[in-house]
Picture 1 (tube, helix red, strand yellow):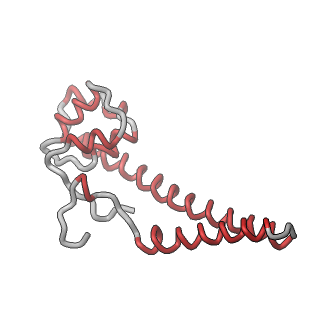
Picture 2: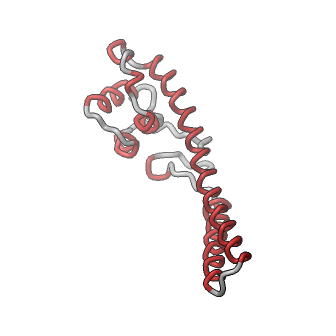
Picture 3: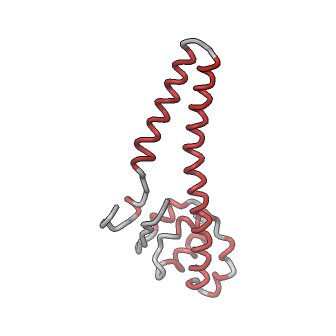
Length: 145
């Protein structure tokens, strides 16, 4: 995404080696292990299938762990931004924002954040995607996982 301004339609991060090389290799490996198991049940076939399943699990869990760690950092970052930017009447409500709401609000510019935060709480918008779609002053995050 180098040189391209980030916005809602292009903010999803794809890592070619992870998503388009490793994932298909692991899927083919798991399929091959299943195929080999039907060719004749043996200790080796069962072990190969178990290893293939474990590798697929590790693939997905590694991504989930990275995203969870990133979400924790986002929550901290957003609490600090909100403490600096929200008006007094919203200051006491900072801890009522859910992690998903904070993830959605993270792309809002400083000038837009107070009004958008109020809207999110008042209208109980609970998922990131609708919140992101409301942002008009998109602040890209180019260091995402």
